[in-house]
Image (cartoon, rainbow, N blue to C red; front, top):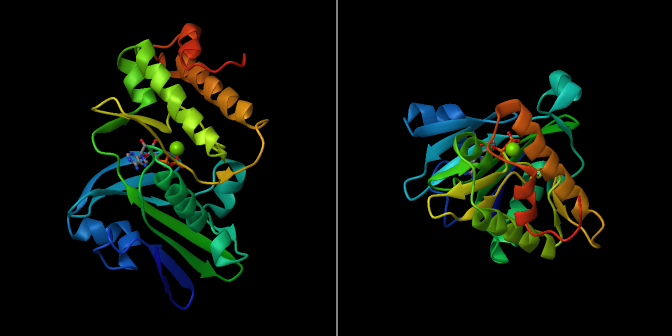
Length: 233
Ligand SMILES: Nc1ncnc2c1ncn2[C@@H]1O[C@H](COP(=O)(O)OP(=O)(O)O)[C@@H](O)[C@H]1O
Ligand SMILES: [Mg+2]
């Protein structure tokens, strides 16, 4: 990892993957002007997919959710550069990637300091030819083998002691080779012990149940068993 320190701004990047202007590349309009926006997805904010010549990137500006989000939208209290959301996620993705987990390769992260606050952005690899579990399950149910693979990926993450604090079915992708990918590691961290793992799983189960009612996904409680977690949730 390389880094670039500017007046009020810090950029961390993988020099092998970055070919664009280090500061401008976090601005979606930079890619729009070059006609290199290839798509977008909506979560909390908009994730822009951009053409990086050799690979596609997913560009995300960090935003708050909930009530607080309506007031301060995208500002976080600054303490030090290495505690910023973007640096934390960039580093965690690197650790997981090195351990062989199926997560997006981090390309670059940035934090911009404004008074006591900062804003943050992350550019990671877009998982090629993938869709999230919600949109897949809106069309058809999934076979047991796929659920077993999903369970295996989550176990790999937990074996590395990574707590995914927002494990839901929007954050699980499946590509055209049926490879399972986990995404969206904002506010996630490595933690000792095991007690918290069940909370990740409970959240995931709630997510299936929520989308069952909200979007009529093709899912039943029996499918939960195929994930292969011994504990009853
Ligand atoms: N690396 C990626 N590859 C493919 N799709 C992605 C990637 N990152 C995000 N997406 C898409 O964008 C959506 C929102 O991104 P996400 O990182 O989950 O942010 P948030 O949920 O905080 O808005 C995801 O549900 C997914 O559909
Ligand atoms: Mg998400």
